[in-house]
Length: 267
Picture 1 (cartoon, rainbow, N blue to C red):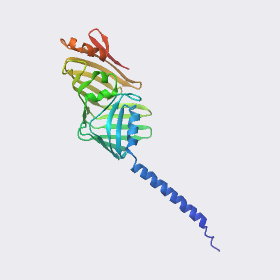
Picture 2 (picture 1 turned 135 degrees about the vertical axis):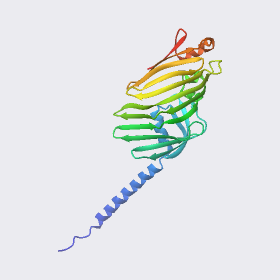
Picture 3 (picture 1 turned 45 degrees about the vertical axis):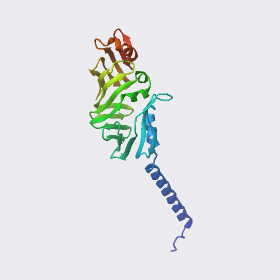
Picture 4 (picture 1 turned 180 degrees about the horizontal axis):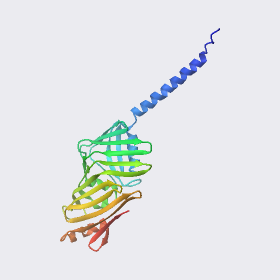
């Protein structure tokens, strides 16, 4: 029996295929490892309808920094940036990724946001505790009516184990979150302080949103719910007895006037 002749060309072709495959694999790994920070900032801008923009991004998608800017959306002229830079790290987890963020001006310590994903499913988890405190003036970047109100004071966010999950294109919420608008003021009023207010989000089959006044001459209240069609909210604003003259102009801006009150309607 004679041995089959050695086919050098077949061996060379096989070697070339392995070399090309290895090069492609190495290039893909390098692309992921050194992916620019702009990939993350671009994804966030698209997800927020270009209302939250991370400008002047530096570093990589895994370890980067940027300036946090609120805008009025595509083509809007309004924009407001936070002082300093937002720093983040992104790391793989068992079923997703963990985003950790720090910003000296506004985030309480370090924010850890977990994103889990599977076939047709997303889950975003915000652990319980204080998240951060931001200047209310930052909201002017969103445009009307915030740019007209010229707010002062601060906005603080705390999580009660908020979990947002998307399955087959439908979002659901569990846990909750609280937004406190503290010591608000406005350039439309001569009052030094309008008051402090609490906005509470409670998850469930139909997530609910509740607005209540904690203290102050401007009285705000309302409630709403989140459905597949979006947010539906109804509320009202009024002046405490004796404060009507100095709040009248502000009430005209906040909502549709009905006598001494202003009706707030969203959705």
